[in-house]
Length: 501
Image (cartoon, rainbow, N blue to C red; front, side, top):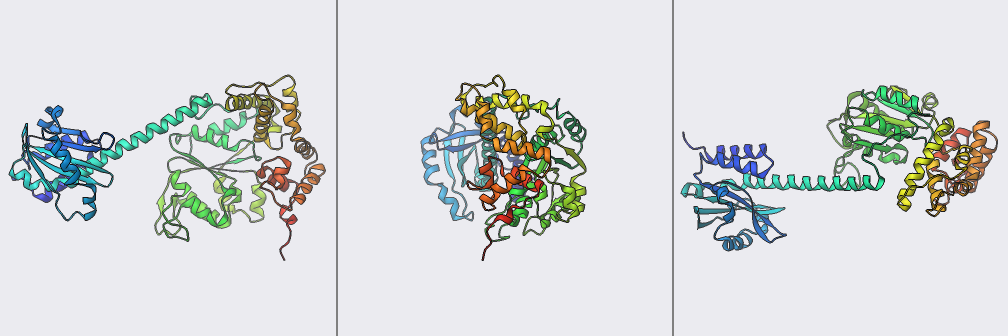
């Protein structure tokens, strides 16, 4: 059987390298392949380790594996000097046209040919033991495939190191939270949220789009995560995007990605949220805030399962489970044309209505105990407990900000208590106007004291909602909560902004 040609040998070597990521496996396979073309008794791959300032053997085959303890060679000092001078990293920058230098020496297992394996990220040496004239002639062919094998091994170990570091960070965070995993039970799942969790269990095994309806702060993201964790995509990513927080001119880029140079500032290619969520779940919070143009592209993704980056020519297939959420009246938005009817039908295949906290008063105490334990652990290293009368005080509140407001009140109470307990009475006093306004709104609909209070706050802030001088900060509520309440009582905050002459 005739030995393979140079081209045939090179193709065969690359084919073997592509099948093995671990360097030890690659070395054994490559040595077996070389047996028919380049007579050798052994070979070894050495890698320059900056930490030890030495060439360290990382893989060997044949006689070299048997004599591995004697590697790199009896001429170690000479080989080290040669690797740092005759084959420096800067040699690579001069191009591949020049054949790599070879170093020949005599070792314990016969003639040795040393070949540099150079890469911008590493330096290495391939040693061929017992190499004759034919091996010396064909040795330069081996540089590229063996360098690829060494680079594959480096990348595998780097990914393994990053994964171990990420797992260590995750374990440390879970330990600080006193939890075993990132899921955890939902407070109220057997109480006020029992119907919601039954619907979640019904739809989770499917890939049908889900629309979660509920007031701001009622826990829509918690329900979305529970849906993801019970689905067959649980091993995939769960990504949350607040559509209301994305500037209108950047929505397409954020959701669908963009190509380099697609617009001013696009200095590199960027994957959109749909590409990042491929194989998992994408949670679009406040989906009602999407501008019309983005609604059209979102409809296309749901229909075809493909996305097109801004500035791109082709389409990319994605497999994403969509869960959307909103606190707005989507039916009225469809009627007035601010939300596309065809998109509404797509995102609301399976709607889940999430009750507000005032509609499930039986969960207030359980949630308060849960947040008290969390706040105590986070702030003082030990859980805190509600005091006498605290449950009654909390139950009497209307909670216009829902679960998010309750969590804020409990954390404020923990801070006011100085680690000795919870000062719930003072914490509630800090939001008395908000609680009273919420009570009035719950009783009188969109009129009465709540509208008066909200109008006064917006007028005083000159139509500004967010920021340190906004109405939300003055009332001590979340900006999204305030906007929801303003819409409910029919107050248009933009009308209080000073006109520009």
